[in-house]
Amino acid sequence: MTLGKGIEQLQIFGTFWALATVATVVYLFVNGFVKTQLARIIVDLIFSLFAAPAFWIANVHFNNGEFRLFVFLAVALGVATSYICFRSTLDKLSAKLYNLFTTKKVDNNGKTIL
Image (cartoon, rainbow, N blue to C red; front, top):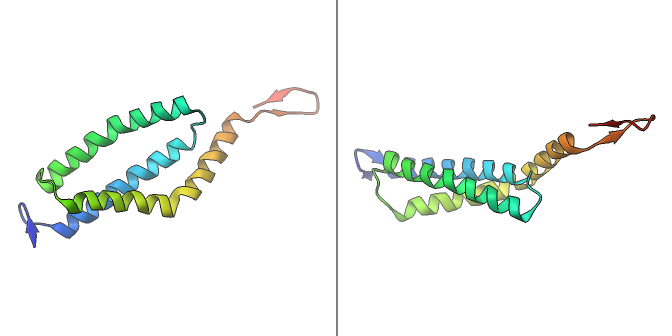
């Protein structure tokens, strides 16, 4: 089966699955640095402002602008893949990086060291 100008539907499915997986990995990593509810809302808004046009442009470019059910299924599976495979690892990594740059230590003389 082909779609549009000879593009395979399975290739389009894989492209959107990969795009959703990468976008969700980035979201989970950045979201690990956020500690307050207001900051989470701001990060969600900023991410949405970049992700929605990126998916729109990808759909126009790779899928000739056609909306098919398998595109939404690929995006949902990409998000699920990221949550299942990468969530705990990304949470640990972002927590370690957050603590690395925000933890203050005090030496023997009482001097604060970042």
